[in-house]
Each structure stands twice: as structure tokens, then as C-alpha cells.
Length: 568
Image (cartoon, rainbow, N blue to C red):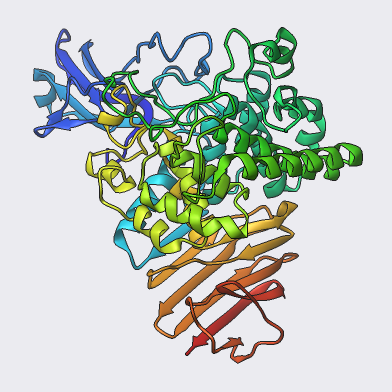
């Protein structure tokens, strides 16, 4: 059918006398030109025999329920739709096929999705394929009406929801599914410490992209609990000391029947089919009581909670969260940064420095100006030593640090740990892991592997809201070596369009900004440039400001504008 999708099979067949039997096979993977009957892990294969009735009749193949993804925690399909199955390929075998009548169709189930809402194209064909893979992944995995973790479990998790949310915002003008998933998870938390904290991040993006504060106000007390300040000490660090893990804490964050644990990334060594000698996806992270990744998340949650409290009129809370974030940042950099190596330790009590202990502080703004370059340089030595989930934060960190060249290399890589590898192995939806070898039980329909769906618009093309509800935006492209690119991205106020041409000595940017929106436009300046000139719509630009390797043109109004940066 071209693309993998969740759905059901309908077929119209003719049996002259009845009693004919056909065998129907559905699957996601091919082997030697046929559907692979043993794809392994959670890749799907289904074989059923169907007895035909006399005459020309239409049949819907009944999908059997799977014990794992229809369990107590799973999101069930509604009765009016029935069970669905992810498949790309169909084989039908039987004598009745030769009777001259046969119509085969796949009935696809997904949340309403506008395929034309977002468009991206560039001069790099690999990047274009990666974008299309990830954009389609958001549509295809929306079948449950909530963000779920793929077909194996069909359970909402905060980590999946965060990546799904950002990506969904960038590929369709749709905000309700993200909010419904967020509110579901506020009341049905999952076990990783960092993912409890992610609920605060999800709340912030909901407010930032919609301008609607109702969810924050409605769930304000729960969001305060999700910052996990109950686990913090006098130094501001949170830790999972047993005396702090009380029934009252678990009740306050709505975590039931599970124990809070630090995760860093997933999977860990020696589980889910990984042998003890295989490294998992944590880059050898050394787990300590004070965990660098957890506390980077805690800092981000405090900082965002301060903003949301201020917007909600809770000024005392806002000031308290801001003070707590400042205290934590000071101690974080004093106790976790290793001046000799120029990198952050995994935690207090170890000198091991992993990718994760550095990309999260870089992503969340904990690495100040004097540390940023050293940390970024360390991050670049580790490669893609994280999972597809971790790649979201790695890519954010690289663009935050101005490492666009390296970020583009990762986005367009054809290595085994790459999005292109997902295409190469035969999937049309993002995978749960870079390859089967890194997570043997993985499925082939996991939106948490679709980070480029939001990284390309938000970071490479640089379109982000800087005030809630897109009343003010930033357009800050970081093209690196990319010669051309164009984007149309939906927002709650209308489409933002931007395109650039990037040639030696000249950068041309065109933008279309919706009505009632102000834009701050940034033009990338090659490192070491001293002399330059900027024009706007063919006229010399008015006041501009140089900020690092960018020229800022502030307060641009709605409509179409053309910017040219000439450098010498």
C-alpha cells in the first residue's frame, strides 16, 4: 500500500459455489520479496484463513486483540472502529483469486490530519526524505486519539508525548490531541523521574503554542507537584532518597503501582534482549544519587514553572520558582562541571562524563557562555550515542549552541544510527530505535523517533514562538552548508512561510508572517565576518543588531519581506 498504516483490510471476492478458502497475510516487513512471517520483536505479521460465501461478497478481516496492547494501561480502540493493525503489505492466496472479481482496500485509522498544512523542501534529498518520514509518522501514529508509544504497548508516556506534541504542532494546525494527552498523563503518570518533570515542559509548550492558559490554571497544583521540589535538598538538587519517596509524594504526582526511578535514556544495558556486553543507549552513564540528567530536567521545570506561575497571576510562586532555579543552576555548575575536562559529570561522586550528562544541560541553558563551547565540543566527540528519544535533546542542544554544521551532519547521516537508516531498513514510520540490534523488541511505528518533524522547522529553519500564542515569533535559520530550503509551518494565527538561498558571500531570506504577529528576524553571519550589508525589500536595512553570529532585525510586521545579507 506504499506506506505502513494502522487500519483494517476489506476485500471483495467471488466464490461461485461457496466453500472456497483464501489465506490472508498482513505485515510490515519484507524478506526476499514476500511478507516476512517472522520479523521479530514487535514488528507485525498476521495470517488468517477466510472461508468464502457464495457469490460476490465484501469481507472485513477481523483483527484479533493483542494481550500486550489491549491490557489495563493501554488505550483501547473504540467499539465503533474496532481493533486495528499496522501493515504495509498484503498477500492473498487461494483458488478464488482467479475468479475474475477482486477488490482490495485498506481502511486507515488516524486522527484528522491536514496533509497540506506543512511543507518542507531543500537542496538535500536525504533531508527531504527524513522530513517526510517524520511528518507522516505523526499522522500514522495518531490512530488512538492519544499519543501512545507505538503498537507494542499503546500506552501514553510523557517522553513520547513531548516529542509528539512538538512535532504535531509543526506539521498540522492541531492542538487538542496534545492537550488531551497531556491531561491524561497528569492523572496517569509513568515511572521515570525525568518523565514526571516533562509534564511541566508539555504544559509550557501547550501554553506557548496556543496562548491558552486554561490547562495551566486548571491543573496548577498538580503541575507544581510535578516539579518534584518535594525531592530537593537545601542545595537544590533532587534525589531519590528512600525517606522522600512517600505515599503522599506518589499521590501528589498521580503515580500508582510503580516506583519512581531515574531513566536517562532507554533501553539500559542487559535488558529487552540486549546482552550484558552491549551498551544500551546511555553512553555508559554512571547512576549516582545526585543525577546530572535528572537535575537538568528539574532546573528546566523550575524555570518554566516560574513563567507559567507569573502568567497565571501567582507572583509569589513565580518568584520562589525563579529563586530555586537560580540556586540549582549555581550548585549544578559548581559541583557537576569538571573544569579539567570541560564537561559535566554524570553525577556527584563520579568523574565519568557521558553524552547525556552534557547534552541536557546544553539543551536547557544550564551551560553558561563560558562553558558552552567546551561542552559542545565534548558532545560532538560522542556522536549519536543516544536513543531516538535522546536525539531530540541532542539536536536541540547542538542548535542551541550554534553547532548547525554538526547538527546537519546528523540529520542527513546514512549511518546505522540515523533517520535515513529507518528508511533503508524498509519502514515508512519512524522506528522505536535506530535499528533492531539496539532494541530487539522494538516496533516500527513509534513517534518518539520522529524528532526531525520539529527540529527542522524549529531549529534548522528557526521558526519558534517567543510569546504565547505566536503573537511574537523568531525566525532564525541555521542553514550550515545547506544551499536552499523552504518551509510552510502552520500556527494558531496562520501559516508562517520562509525560504532561503545560501551561497558564498550572500544569504537571501524571504518570509511571510501572518496578521497580528511581530517577527524578530535573524540572518546567519559566517564566523569571522567583519564587514557586511543588509537590505530589506531592496532597501538598506534600518537598525540592526549583531548577536554573536547573527544579524538581528527586530519588530518585523506581517506580510511578505525579503532580506539579503552580503558579506565580505
